[in-house]
Amino acid sequence: MTERIVVVGAAVLRDGCLLAARRSAPAELAGRWELPGGKVEPGEEAEEALVRELREELGVEAAAVRRVPGEFPLREPYVLRVWTARLLEGSPEPKPLQDHDELRWLPPDEVWDVEWLDQDVAAVLEVVRGV
Ligand SMILES: Nc1nc2c([nH]c(=O)n2[C@H]2C[C@H](O)[C@@H](COP(=O)(O)OP(=O)(O)OP(=O)(O)O)O2)c(=O)[nH]1
Image 1 (tube, rainbow, N blue to C red):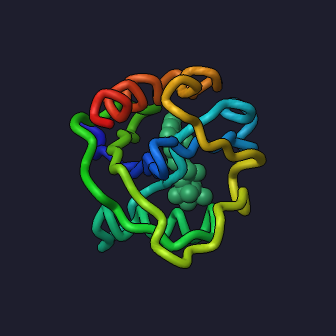
Image 2: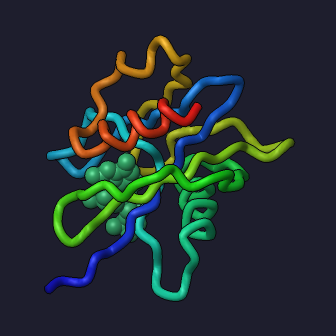
């Protein structure tokens, strides 16, 4: 059995809006929308990985708030675990620095206006359910 590798995804929320990020690479994912995040590195806690990835990818200072229930299968051996997150006071505005070419703050009635990665749909449903 292959060991699962955890990818953390951040549902960054602000004023009731969810931050979505459009992937610019690799080719098979480019153009589709996801929750920003990435792989947890050895020796790292998931919430630490989340904060690090948000800093690297978006240039923001953020904190994990709560775990969104569930674990969402990605391409083997990866699984996605999601936390809601918030920007810290004084954080720079998010910018697509790495892996993404566009960001959008989605109000509740626009959450399904972007083409999420197929494997993210269940996670986003769970986020929306909890908001
Ligand atoms: N970050 C993120 N990755 C996702 C989501 N859904 C999904 O299938 N993935 C996939 C894309 C990648 O194959 C993998 C995470 O890779 P990544 O490229 O974001 O991770 P990373 O920043 O650690 O990248 P690297 O070390 O490989 O450069 O999970 C999602 O919602 N967020």
